[in-house]
Image: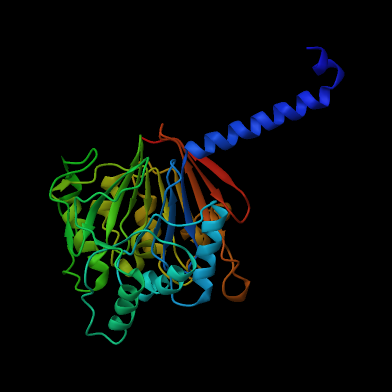
Amino acid sequence: MRPILRFPFLALAFAAALAAASMLHARARDLRIYWIDVEGGASTLIVAPSGESLLVDTGFPGDRDTNRIVAAVKAAGLTKLNALVVTHYHADHVGGVPALAKLIPIDRFYDHGESIEMATKHGPEFYNGYVAAVDGKRTIAKPGDKIPLAGVDITVVSANGEVIGSPVSNGGSANELCKDAQQKPEDKTENSRSVGFLLTYGKFKFLDLGDLTWDREMMLACPANKIGTVTLFQASHHGFSGGQSGSPAFVWALRPKVVIVNDGAHKGFDANAYDIIEKIPGIEGLWQIHRAVESDAAHNAPEQMIANLEEGASDQGLGLQVSASKSGQFTVTNARNKFQKTYNAH
Protein backbone atom coordinates (compact mmCIF):
# COMPACT_ATOMS: atom_id res chain seq x y z
CA MET A 1 0.00 0.00 0.00
CA ARG A 2 2.89 2.38 0.75
CA PRO A 3 4.02 2.82 -2.90
CA ILE A 4 0.48 3.64 -3.90
CA LEU A 5 0.29 6.34 -1.24
CA ARG A 6 3.64 7.81 -2.23
CA PHE A 7 3.07 7.58 -5.99
CA PRO A 8 -0.67 7.83 -6.56
CA PHE A 9 -0.18 8.69 -10.22
CA LEU A 10 1.40 5.26 -10.79
CA ALA A 11 -1.60 3.53 -9.27
CA LEU A 12 -3.94 5.58 -11.41
CA ALA A 13 -1.90 4.87 -14.55
CA PHE A 14 -1.85 1.15 -13.75
CA ALA A 15 -5.59 1.14 -13.11
CA ALA A 16 -6.21 2.99 -16.36
CA ALA A 17 -3.99 0.56 -18.27
CA LEU A 18 -5.74 -2.39 -16.67
CA ALA A 19 -9.14 -0.95 -17.53
CA ALA A 20 -8.05 -0.32 -21.12
CA ALA A 21 -6.70 -3.85 -21.40
CA SER A 22 -9.94 -5.21 -19.98
CA MET A 23 -11.97 -3.22 -22.50
CA LEU A 24 -9.79 -4.43 -25.37
CA HIS A 25 -10.15 -8.01 -24.15
CA ALA A 26 -13.93 -7.61 -23.93
CA ARG A 27 -14.06 -6.15 -27.42
CA ALA A 28 -11.93 -9.00 -28.71
CA ARG A 29 -14.62 -11.42 -27.53
CA ASP A 30 -17.34 -9.50 -29.36
CA LEU A 31 -18.51 -10.10 -32.89
CA ARG A 32 -17.92 -7.02 -35.05
CA ILE A 33 -19.71 -6.13 -38.29
CA TYR A 34 -18.76 -3.16 -40.47
CA TRP A 35 -20.94 -1.76 -43.26
CA ILE A 36 -18.67 -0.09 -45.79
CA ASP A 37 -20.00 2.68 -48.02
CA VAL A 38 -19.61 1.50 -51.61
CA GLU A 39 -22.41 3.77 -52.81
CA GLY A 40 -25.20 1.23 -52.72
CA GLY A 41 -23.20 -1.84 -53.75
CA ALA A 42 -23.36 -3.42 -50.29
CA SER A 43 -20.04 -4.44 -48.74
CA THR A 44 -20.05 -5.95 -45.27
CA LEU A 45 -17.02 -6.93 -43.19
CA ILE A 46 -17.49 -9.47 -40.40
CA VAL A 47 -14.83 -10.05 -37.73
CA ALA A 48 -15.52 -13.05 -35.49
CA PRO A 49 -14.54 -13.09 -31.80
CA SER A 50 -11.67 -15.38 -32.81
CA GLY A 51 -10.24 -12.66 -35.04
CA GLU A 52 -11.06 -14.51 -38.25
CA SER A 53 -12.78 -12.39 -40.90
CA LEU A 54 -15.23 -12.58 -43.77
CA LEU A 55 -16.03 -9.90 -46.34
CA VAL A 56 -19.31 -9.94 -48.24
CA ASP A 57 -19.13 -8.26 -51.68
CA THR A 58 -16.64 -5.69 -52.92
CA GLY A 59 -18.51 -2.82 -54.54
CA PHE A 60 -17.87 -1.38 -57.99
CA PRO A 61 -14.67 -1.59 -60.05
CA GLY A 62 -12.22 1.27 -59.52
CA ASP A 63 -10.19 2.75 -56.69
CA ARG A 64 -12.98 4.37 -54.66
CA ASP A 65 -14.66 1.26 -53.28
CA THR A 66 -11.47 -0.81 -53.11
CA ASN A 67 -9.71 1.89 -51.08
CA ARG A 68 -12.66 2.18 -48.71
CA ILE A 69 -12.67 -1.58 -48.14
CA VAL A 70 -8.90 -1.68 -47.57
CA ALA A 71 -9.21 1.17 -45.07
CA ALA A 72 -11.97 -0.67 -43.20
CA VAL A 73 -9.95 -3.89 -43.12
CA LYS A 74 -6.94 -2.07 -41.67
CA ALA A 75 -9.07 -0.17 -39.16
CA ALA A 76 -10.42 -3.52 -37.96
CA GLY A 77 -6.84 -4.60 -37.23
CA LEU A 78 -6.70 -7.21 -39.98
CA THR A 79 -3.84 -8.11 -42.31
CA LYS A 80 -5.82 -10.57 -44.44
CA LEU A 81 -9.31 -11.92 -45.06
CA ASN A 82 -10.11 -15.52 -44.21
CA ALA A 83 -13.04 -15.56 -46.60
CA LEU A 84 -14.80 -13.47 -49.23
CA VAL A 85 -18.41 -14.15 -50.21
CA VAL A 86 -19.54 -12.84 -53.58
CA THR A 87 -23.32 -12.92 -53.43
CA HIS A 88 -23.74 -12.55 -57.21
CA TYR A 89 -21.98 -11.19 -60.28
CA HIS A 90 -23.39 -7.70 -60.78
CA ALA A 91 -20.79 -4.94 -61.06
CA ASP A 92 -21.68 -3.31 -57.73
CA HIS A 93 -21.04 -6.55 -55.84
CA VAL A 94 -18.21 -8.34 -57.67
CA GLY A 95 -16.55 -5.47 -59.53
CA GLY A 96 -13.90 -4.79 -56.91
CA VAL A 97 -12.64 -8.37 -56.52
CA PRO A 98 -9.69 -8.25 -58.97
CA ALA A 99 -8.23 -5.08 -57.46
CA LEU A 100 -8.89 -6.13 -53.86
CA ALA A 101 -7.29 -9.54 -54.33
CA LYS A 102 -4.05 -7.79 -55.32
CA LEU A 103 -4.01 -5.66 -52.18
CA ILE A 104 -5.15 -8.04 -49.43
CA PRO A 105 -4.45 -11.77 -49.01
CA ILE A 106 -7.73 -13.71 -49.22
CA ASP A 107 -7.75 -17.36 -48.15
CA ARG A 108 -11.01 -18.54 -49.70
CA PHE A 109 -13.74 -17.29 -52.06
CA TYR A 110 -17.39 -18.40 -51.92
CA ASP A 111 -19.95 -17.89 -54.70
CA HIS A 112 -23.07 -19.50 -56.22
CA GLY A 113 -21.45 -20.99 -59.32
CA GLU A 114 -21.46 -19.79 -62.92
CA SER A 115 -23.15 -16.52 -63.84
CA ILE A 116 -26.52 -16.79 -65.59
CA GLU A 117 -25.92 -13.48 -67.36
CA MET A 118 -23.08 -14.48 -69.68
CA ALA A 119 -25.17 -13.39 -72.67
CA THR A 120 -25.50 -9.81 -71.39
CA LYS A 121 -23.19 -6.97 -72.40
CA HIS A 122 -20.99 -6.94 -69.28
CA GLY A 123 -21.79 -10.37 -67.81
CA PRO A 124 -18.66 -12.13 -69.14
CA GLU A 125 -16.42 -9.22 -68.13
CA PHE A 126 -17.33 -9.31 -64.45
CA TYR A 127 -17.65 -13.07 -64.12
CA ASN A 128 -14.42 -13.89 -65.95
CA GLY A 129 -12.58 -11.17 -64.04
CA TYR A 130 -13.71 -12.74 -60.80
CA VAL A 131 -12.75 -16.28 -61.82
CA ALA A 132 -9.27 -15.11 -62.83
CA ALA A 133 -8.81 -13.33 -59.49
CA VAL A 134 -9.77 -16.26 -57.23
CA ASP A 135 -6.82 -18.31 -58.51
CA GLY A 136 -8.19 -21.74 -57.61
CA LYS A 137 -9.28 -20.79 -54.07
CA ARG A 138 -12.97 -21.04 -54.90
CA THR A 139 -15.84 -22.87 -53.19
CA ILE A 140 -19.31 -23.02 -54.73
CA ALA A 141 -21.81 -22.58 -51.89
CA LYS A 142 -25.09 -24.46 -51.70
CA PRO A 143 -28.07 -24.02 -49.36
CA GLY A 144 -27.37 -25.80 -46.09
CA ASP A 145 -23.59 -25.49 -46.39
CA LYS A 146 -21.51 -23.98 -43.60
CA ILE A 147 -18.98 -21.23 -44.23
CA PRO A 148 -16.21 -21.81 -41.68
CA LEU A 149 -15.37 -18.83 -39.47
CA ALA A 150 -14.04 -19.71 -36.04
CA GLY A 151 -16.28 -18.57 -33.19
CA VAL A 152 -19.52 -18.18 -35.13
CA ASP A 153 -21.91 -20.36 -37.14
CA ILE A 154 -22.64 -19.34 -40.73
CA THR A 155 -25.28 -21.31 -42.61
CA VAL A 156 -25.95 -20.70 -46.30
CA VAL A 157 -29.71 -20.30 -46.75
CA SER A 158 -29.85 -19.35 -50.45
CA ALA A 159 -27.62 -19.84 -53.48
CA ASN A 160 -28.02 -20.20 -57.25
CA GLY A 161 -31.79 -19.70 -57.09
CA GLU A 162 -32.35 -22.38 -54.46
CA VAL A 163 -33.10 -22.10 -50.75
CA ILE A 164 -32.68 -24.38 -47.76
CA GLY A 165 -34.97 -27.40 -47.70
CA SER A 166 -35.15 -27.66 -43.90
CA PRO A 167 -35.62 -24.85 -41.37
CA VAL A 168 -32.61 -23.41 -39.56
CA SER A 169 -32.26 -21.79 -36.16
CA ASN A 170 -35.72 -21.25 -34.65
CA GLY A 171 -37.51 -21.54 -38.01
CA GLY A 172 -40.16 -23.94 -39.19
CA SER A 173 -43.33 -22.41 -37.81
CA ALA A 174 -46.36 -21.91 -40.06
CA ASN A 175 -46.39 -18.35 -41.37
CA GLU A 176 -49.83 -16.76 -41.10
CA LEU A 177 -48.61 -13.83 -43.19
CA CYS A 178 -48.57 -16.08 -46.25
CA LYS A 179 -52.35 -15.90 -46.52
CA ASP A 180 -53.17 -13.54 -49.40
CA ALA A 181 -49.48 -12.53 -49.63
CA GLN A 182 -48.44 -10.90 -52.90
CA GLN A 183 -46.58 -13.16 -55.32
CA LYS A 184 -44.27 -11.91 -58.04
CA PRO A 185 -42.99 -13.62 -61.21
CA GLU A 186 -39.79 -15.63 -61.11
CA ASP A 187 -36.76 -13.38 -61.30
CA LYS A 188 -34.30 -14.57 -63.95
CA THR A 189 -31.38 -12.26 -63.16
CA GLU A 190 -28.26 -12.73 -61.08
CA ASN A 191 -30.08 -11.13 -58.13
CA SER A 192 -32.17 -14.25 -57.62
CA ARG A 193 -28.98 -16.34 -57.48
CA SER A 194 -27.62 -14.43 -54.47
CA VAL A 195 -25.72 -16.32 -51.80
CA GLY A 196 -27.49 -15.54 -48.53
CA PHE A 197 -26.54 -16.68 -45.05
CA LEU A 198 -27.60 -16.66 -41.42
CA LEU A 199 -24.82 -15.90 -38.93
CA THR A 200 -25.39 -17.07 -35.36
CA TYR A 201 -23.31 -16.01 -32.35
CA GLY A 202 -25.05 -17.17 -29.20
CA LYS A 203 -28.40 -15.39 -29.10
CA PHE A 204 -27.36 -12.91 -31.79
CA LYS A 205 -28.52 -13.74 -35.34
CA PHE A 206 -27.59 -11.73 -38.43
CA LEU A 207 -29.19 -12.30 -41.84
CA ASP A 208 -27.56 -11.12 -45.09
CA LEU A 209 -29.19 -12.21 -48.37
CA GLY A 210 -27.37 -10.00 -50.86
CA ASP A 211 -29.87 -8.94 -53.54
CA LEU A 212 -32.17 -11.94 -53.11
CA THR A 213 -35.47 -11.32 -54.88
CA TRP A 214 -39.12 -11.33 -53.79
CA ASP A 215 -39.90 -14.73 -55.35
CA ARG A 216 -37.02 -16.40 -53.47
CA GLU A 217 -37.96 -14.65 -50.24
CA MET A 218 -41.37 -16.26 -50.56
CA MET A 219 -39.69 -19.65 -50.92
CA LEU A 220 -38.05 -19.01 -47.54
CA ALA A 221 -41.20 -17.60 -45.96
CA CYS A 222 -44.12 -19.75 -47.12
CA PRO A 223 -45.92 -21.83 -46.10
CA ALA A 224 -43.49 -22.02 -43.16
CA ASN A 225 -40.90 -19.47 -42.12
CA LYS A 226 -37.66 -21.41 -42.61
CA ILE A 227 -35.44 -18.73 -41.05
CA GLY A 228 -37.38 -17.93 -37.88
CA THR A 229 -36.71 -14.64 -36.10
CA VAL A 230 -33.43 -12.77 -36.38
CA THR A 231 -31.73 -10.05 -34.37
CA LEU A 232 -30.31 -7.96 -37.18
CA PHE A 233 -31.28 -7.89 -40.86
CA GLN A 234 -29.40 -6.21 -43.69
CA ALA A 235 -32.21 -5.09 -45.99
CA SER A 236 -31.79 -6.95 -49.29
CA HIS A 237 -31.12 -5.27 -52.63
CA HIS A 238 -29.79 -2.02 -51.13
CA GLY A 239 -33.00 -1.49 -49.18
CA PHE A 240 -35.66 -3.34 -51.21
CA SER A 241 -34.81 -1.37 -54.35
CA GLY A 242 -37.73 -0.94 -56.72
CA GLY A 243 -39.82 -3.52 -54.88
CA GLN A 244 -37.72 -6.35 -56.29
CA SER A 245 -37.30 -7.67 -52.74
CA GLY A 246 -38.84 -6.91 -49.37
CA SER A 247 -41.88 -9.19 -49.30
CA PRO A 248 -43.83 -8.27 -46.14
CA ALA A 249 -44.71 -11.95 -45.62
CA PHE A 250 -40.99 -12.62 -45.29
CA VAL A 251 -39.65 -9.43 -43.69
CA TRP A 252 -42.36 -9.16 -41.04
CA ALA A 253 -41.98 -12.86 -40.11
CA LEU A 254 -38.26 -12.31 -39.44
CA ARG A 255 -39.09 -9.70 -36.78
CA PRO A 256 -35.59 -8.19 -36.64
CA LYS A 257 -34.89 -5.81 -33.79
CA VAL A 258 -32.76 -3.67 -36.12
CA VAL A 259 -32.58 -3.24 -39.89
CA ILE A 260 -29.50 -1.78 -41.58
CA VAL A 261 -29.84 -0.39 -45.10
CA ASN A 262 -26.63 -0.30 -47.16
CA ASP A 263 -27.98 2.08 -49.78
CA GLY A 264 -26.73 4.91 -51.94
CA ALA A 265 -27.99 8.49 -51.96
CA HIS A 266 -30.00 7.70 -55.09
CA LYS A 267 -29.90 3.92 -54.96
CA GLY A 268 -32.11 1.45 -53.16
CA PHE A 269 -34.10 2.79 -50.27
CA ASP A 270 -37.44 4.50 -50.99
CA ALA A 271 -40.67 5.45 -49.24
CA ASN A 272 -42.33 2.09 -49.89
CA ALA A 273 -39.36 0.24 -48.42
CA TYR A 274 -39.44 2.52 -45.37
CA ASP A 275 -43.12 1.71 -44.82
CA ILE A 276 -42.44 -2.04 -44.96
CA ILE A 277 -39.63 -1.78 -42.41
CA GLU A 278 -41.58 0.54 -40.12
CA LYS A 279 -44.34 -2.09 -39.84
CA ILE A 280 -42.04 -4.92 -38.72
CA PRO A 281 -43.49 -6.20 -35.42
CA GLY A 282 -41.27 -5.13 -32.53
CA ILE A 283 -38.67 -3.27 -34.60
CA GLU A 284 -36.52 -0.93 -32.51
CA GLY A 285 -34.06 0.63 -34.96
CA LEU A 286 -33.49 1.53 -38.60
CA TRP A 287 -30.01 2.67 -39.68
CA GLN A 288 -28.91 3.83 -43.14
CA ILE A 289 -25.56 4.21 -44.88
CA HIS A 290 -27.00 7.08 -46.94
CA ARG A 291 -29.86 9.50 -46.60
CA ALA A 292 -32.27 8.66 -49.40
CA VAL A 293 -32.33 12.10 -51.00
CA GLU A 294 -35.37 11.38 -53.13
CA SER A 295 -37.48 10.65 -50.03
CA ASP A 296 -38.63 13.11 -47.42
CA ALA A 297 -37.52 13.17 -43.79
CA ALA A 298 -40.57 11.13 -42.77
CA HIS A 299 -39.27 8.25 -44.93
CA ASN A 300 -35.68 8.27 -43.72
CA ALA A 301 -34.20 7.17 -40.43
CA PRO A 302 -33.46 9.94 -37.90
CA GLU A 303 -30.37 11.87 -39.05
CA GLN A 304 -28.29 10.68 -36.11
CA MET A 305 -28.72 7.11 -37.44
CA ILE A 306 -27.61 7.88 -41.02
CA ALA A 307 -23.90 7.62 -41.82
CA ASN A 308 -23.86 9.94 -44.86
CA LEU A 309 -26.15 12.93 -45.23
CA GLU A 310 -24.42 14.38 -48.29
CA GLU A 311 -23.99 13.15 -51.85
CA GLY A 312 -21.55 13.57 -54.70
CA ALA A 313 -18.27 15.34 -53.91
CA SER A 314 -19.41 16.08 -50.36
CA ASP A 315 -20.00 12.42 -49.54
CA GLN A 316 -17.39 11.25 -47.03
CA GLY A 317 -17.96 7.51 -47.54
CA LEU A 318 -18.65 6.78 -43.87
CA GLY A 319 -20.05 3.55 -42.48
CA LEU A 320 -21.81 1.85 -39.60
CA GLN A 321 -20.49 -0.69 -37.11
CA VAL A 322 -22.06 -3.29 -34.82
CA SER A 323 -20.45 -4.90 -31.81
CA ALA A 324 -22.40 -7.92 -30.55
CA SER A 325 -21.98 -10.16 -27.53
CA LYS A 326 -22.99 -13.79 -27.19
CA SER A 327 -25.83 -12.72 -24.89
CA GLY A 328 -27.51 -11.11 -27.88
CA GLN A 329 -26.85 -7.55 -26.77
CA PHE A 330 -25.40 -5.39 -29.54
CA THR A 331 -24.46 -1.79 -30.13
CA VAL A 332 -24.71 0.11 -33.42
CA THR A 333 -22.28 3.01 -33.95
CA ASN A 334 -22.46 5.72 -36.60
CA ALA A 335 -18.97 6.65 -37.87
CA ARG A 336 -20.13 10.17 -38.81
CA ASN A 337 -21.15 11.40 -35.37
CA LYS A 338 -20.20 8.49 -33.05
CA PHE A 339 -23.85 8.17 -32.06
CA GLN A 340 -24.50 4.76 -30.49
CA LYS A 341 -27.51 2.76 -29.48
CA THR A 342 -27.65 -0.61 -27.72
CA TYR A 343 -30.27 -3.29 -28.30
CA ASN A 344 -31.02 -6.81 -27.04
CA ALA A 345 -31.93 -9.94 -28.94
CA HIS A 346 -35.38 -11.53 -28.71
